Length: 268
Image 1 (cartoon, one colour):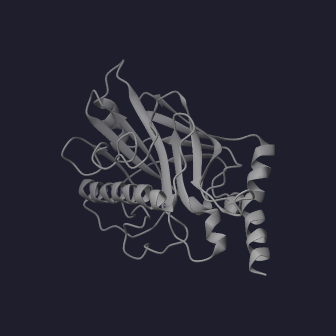
Image 2: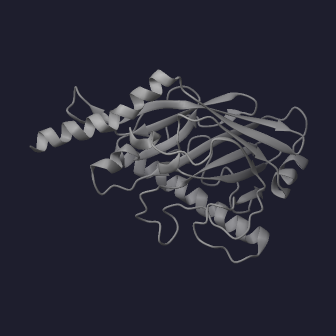
Image 3: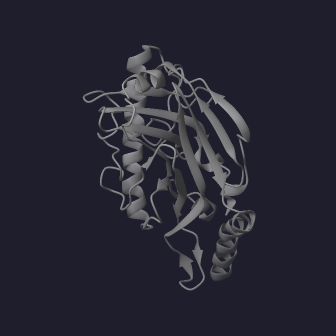
């Protein structure tokens, strides 16, 4: 599928999240309702015992994410330090990485349509209405993150500037607090647990609409892209993505193209 065509971030990148001068791109923002690039991928971290959460956009739009390339991010910010200050030894911290794209105007867009989500075990792929419902939850949470970051910084924010990575530390009653619109299954709109304990690898899936030869149509399908791993070290953390083996990635690259060729033959 065409999702593997571009890579913005390869190797190591440091994220000094400041929460200033940018907003996380998503359909919740004016001007992004019909944006074919989709939302930015973002990380959510939650400590249920401490009743605190942390969120960070990764500066990568879903259509620009390249699942064939390894990625390593370092996270260090005042907001993350605040999160760790409220986290005691032995408390279970969970994390998830999610993005969404519901834009569709022509056949090539099908290669990017759907959810990008961590999951414990293989998730159940949804139909388009299911994608749209879950994506609305993603948009709601991003909107909360934007609001929270604005409250934290008091700055004027520039819409859609992915060069600056917003983050926030949240507690009950504040915008962007994890359980508000998020939770372990996207506000009960998603049939799988998306959260995984820190230090454990989280499978990363594309829930999209690749071509199905048996059905002769684009059908909902969960495709494994690779895995994320979130590791805490003091007041900083690392987030790493490992792709699936090369043969699987090569196979993924062909699914969208095969679907488009088949669709064109049907039209002819």
